[in-house]
Image (tube, rainbow over all chains, first blue to last red; front, side, top):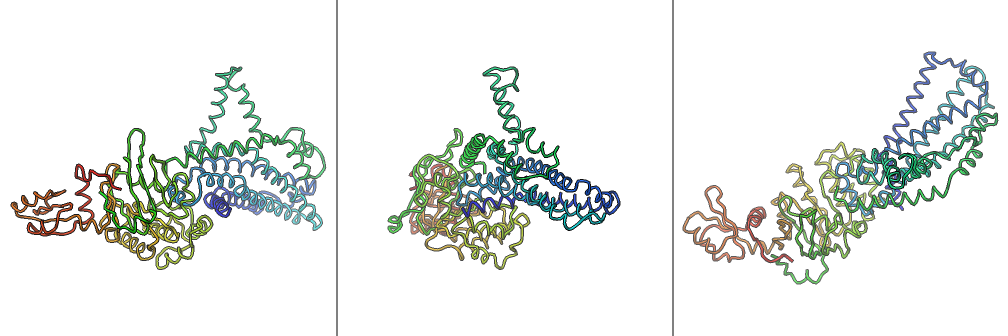
Length: 297
Length: 303
């Protein structure tokens, strides 16, 4: 277990640019731009502070939730590229020979990469997301203070909003990672054999399989097949219309992370998640067998 | 040609044992059924031309490639049990194979957790007196420094077998000499076995206890160095009549260097050759050139 944990940690060291330094720079740039905007008068602190008095908590909620959506998109994109790059990264600079001189099997190495992709790496982005929320709230509260509308009493409500939204982002990350796990494993398994070419291949593969089904089993056209329908369903994040988010958006109740999480978890097809986990393990195993047998060092 | 005759060695289980080792890439067979044993506590040199099958043989030993025939390293099938085997086997297959994204201290911390037989203290002590510092990133080190670091890493692993495949390729002479001196002084013990391949055979000759010459996927010489010294004789002869007389003893190799004729003999008594000219023991590189150019260096298979 110690070796496995160390291998997961090395993924963060190797990819800290994408999962830690990049997001921190992004936050720094956004924060700097916000400060600059106030400094040069592009945004009036008194005006924006007064705006926060209209529906203060709602603006805090929506602002941080908006950040959460942004960070989720960032995470999806970086994890996709991580799977394509990270699973083949050991070949870089001939380092595969070094890793193969270690007493660790190929399956364990690839599993550590997949584990990093659903734990430590998104965990780092999540930590930065929390920081970005904190800075957002800091700026918003300071503008309230400047306009004379900020009170110490309001701080308690703001802290509760922060906790609820932070929990909602955490649950969304966790569900999203589990839901999209087989896609990451597929790209990772392909990348073990073909490196970054796994990106275009992974994009073309669904259309190819769907076309094969259309050719062999028939159908209206290549994108009206069971395969395509299934992949479309499996690619959609399990948030239904008329769910909690929609109800909260049009209502006046404060955002409740527990209600959101309950709604989200109930919408997830856990059988599909289980199938996805099995598929992921098979994809990783096949990738590890290729890696074990390949002379492509 | 195998003359491993020391009785005690035969009774101890060899570190490496290969029987009928074959490897093909496509239709081309690279290894043609190698048979050999490597006993514990020896320093082996595996010498051969580019493409002779050295690295493929090493890869078979290290579980990096699957071969026909049987190969056992420390009693294990290396391809099936590579991860387990690597607890007791260390290797450097390329001088620049350390992961470059790590800092030196990160590498040591990682190895401490991954490798049960790695000692961070030892690795740090091996780096004392060098320019390599814990905070340095590996990608910023020179090639020579990376070689020093990699050597420190493998020497800090308490392994029974150390395999070095061209470990000093591309390094200057100072680094190369320091590399081998360090290895010999700080690492080698009677319990450890070292296997080296290199093209700079003269630089490792002093430390070898045994050599294996491989040519076109076959072992053409597998011998202890003491036996090599006894068995092969180099004769430098100038007089044409003496040359003709010497040729009657069947030199395995003959060439003219700077106007002098040099002959190498296999298994000919030195007393018989002494009258013809100046005798000496051929260097490994001379012997390598001689045996590699023979059409049939050794009809019998090395064992």
